[in-house]
Image 1 (cartoon, rainbow, N blue to C red):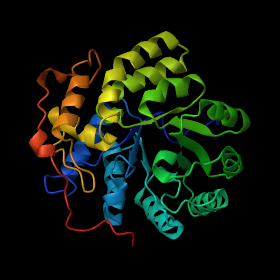
Image 2 (image 1 turned 90 degrees about the horizontal axis):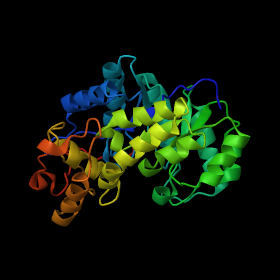
Image 3 (image 1 turned 30 degrees about the vertical axis):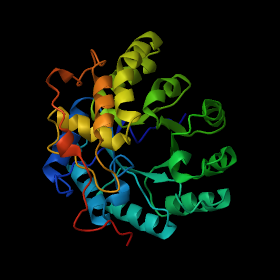
Length: 324
């Protein structure tokens, strides 16, 4: 395990609050970042999958880093996620993010192109070479089409800037193997698997459900840090229906915005196309899960006011999220 963790342990994969017409709601972004830090997050990943990186413009991505740094004011690390499936563009984005004050970068496996392992290795190395920031690799084959194979991870672990992996594969035997053979830190990239990851040596989590309730994740991490598996498990069980509500019926960012809006914490549940708000039956399933949530700090649904009409459809923003 690396002696120094430059990322934090409870990281929120931040949603990007938007207005009803799909423009970034900057005051809501500031408020939401402050809310999650105040509730126990010590790291924020902006412009990741949950932040709708695919449909944000490059200037919006850089501004999210700047706003994050301003609001965090040293209370939490600001990591920039997303990246690009074009190596040159990824380098450009991360270079700008570093200048904007990012504390670290999270590089996703190039998606859609389906490069070989040699291509993945080269992509990560070149991006990591182009920055002095600490790097988290993001391994999520369900979205990218290709895994980062074990042998590739071992080779990447030798790069001085590559310090961690966000794992959404859920191959726990591989996680143990990599932790045994490298100094890489692991971050759970699957909300349902946070405690299993931590219990075998992971450093922390990068979570979607933490947009709604960071405090329970702080409790779990702190309990694991002090070796109290019983307390960690109890909190894990309390969180389970909320995780199910956020992660199983619609994309996580859609559900998280729907729930945050219903709690009155963001002004609109709008997402950008091709994402759309939950349909009636999907919203009903989410609300059924929320009825089971009890005793989760920050997730009091007694005054929950879901708005299926406000969430319906998706926005076409004025400026397309062009690559360059």
